[in-house]
Image 1 (cartoon, rainbow, N blue to C red):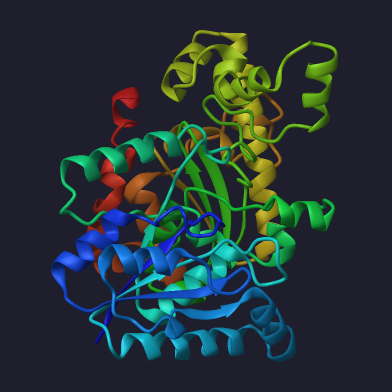
Image 2: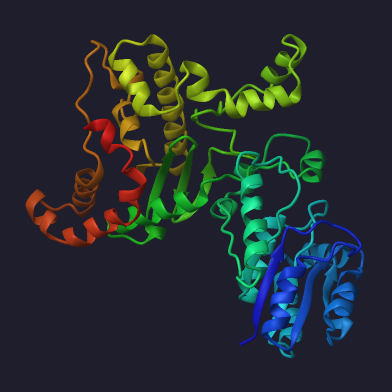
Length: 433
């Protein structure tokens, strides 16, 4: 079977930017017959393949390189649907693959067309081609300014030190591509939103995917049989509603700034606050960016973004720490309630992350006030957490008695809990000693 490599994140252009020459050099050193396939191009063939063919002495027929241009793809998609579009591109890919040992598939930016969402279609094509995906990240990243510049530095450094080693990038937005359009879209002018790719992408997807599937396994069910509200709680925090193994909503949006109160990020804020700070406060866009991403959240409210320290200060009567914690828990409850309404009865909530247990003390208060205190000011008993909570949850779903259910599959449940949770939650234990 022909192997294939799918390179994503290519800027539009006439081919003057030779896409990831290091990838092609690695492929041509390993095998003799390397092909190139571009599923979609903007306005007919561009210069990219000509440059690749000249540099790497490719013998491929140029007529087989291109799937179709955007006008053809849009017409086919409108007339026969996305499935027919994908099927046609898959057939044309296999026409190239028959004569090659490896095919380099090069994606193209098509966000300004009426075609399906770029991330989703590229992911679907890569899956149909059986291709390994290699992302190309470049330039200043406005979407994830805290993460992607450092990620890019690591990629470039590793490539410089060991150009012979293939690199794999895992995108934590991928799990959220199953969100329906009404959950992924903002109520903005559609043309402007499409032109600038303004939509809700979501983040922490690898965590949400793992926790939702592990929860189903603990319940003795397939992911398709379970609805789960997942809470990824740490310095960065996000929530997701997962129905039948597929994400249907998540708290983060175009960037990781939207949603829950976090360590240094504000989470949800009235957009007019930005205009107010510019007009009244005289702040620049860069200053506001820094404020919302690095000087807000728990840190902005009380000067600490470590929940263990905040809990210690609360125990000592610190009012700023108490207010920060109450704001945090209030926002958390709002999202849990909203996602319960989205999913309907029968869901399960899972807290996941370094400080998940600290949040459990306040997040489960129901009609009680923030922090779990009842009308009389008495704190409710702490909920069971960790292994005991998971075992109780599995017993409740199984409908068995305490001892009998505990004997059935205990080893398996404990093994599941040890996988991932031990490392994710070990930072909590020193604070609780």
